[in-house]
Length: 217
Image (cartoon, rainbow, N blue to C red; front, side, top):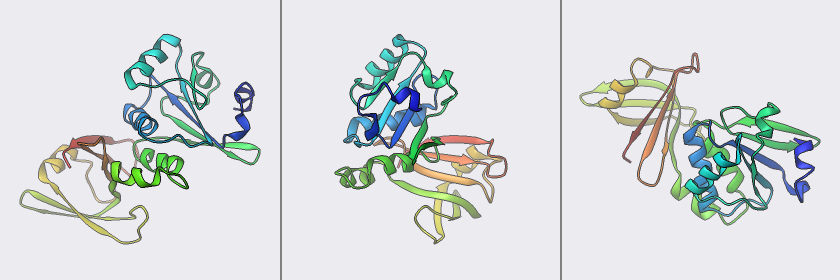
């Protein structure tokens, strides 16, 4: 990381570097990153790096999402971060910890919260974010009760809350997620765009079974 930043002007100002594999990445995570960049003011202490193995691929992405290379948005056309093993198929957030850089993979279950942490605190974005990308619920399924066409989910370990909450979903969602919708599974419902929500389910025992469903709010 340090060797790359040596060639970046004012690199000492950056406490975070978000590396985004532009063409072989988690599409949902990348879309969320681009939405935040497009709609909000860029935090002064964050450097955004889009990486790909050619300038042509990066140009396609930049045109598609209206991104422009600038002081805080860098195009890594030589795929440096991939070749150095600093990123693979998901975006990675690097944060400066004294003299070292800590890394965290950005995946569907944490992308909104991590982006909020970067964009939200202590700046004018505070008034915007919660209205656009709310997380309705996020936690472990504690109990399930099926009544007619409605499924009641009791969810615990909610973000920013120690209380359980009850969520009602349609039976079609239960049928879609079977057999992975079980007690103990991790489930999240969050905004996918301004018109749709995305529901994510992960098998908490193996962390290998992951399914998504888009549904209207």
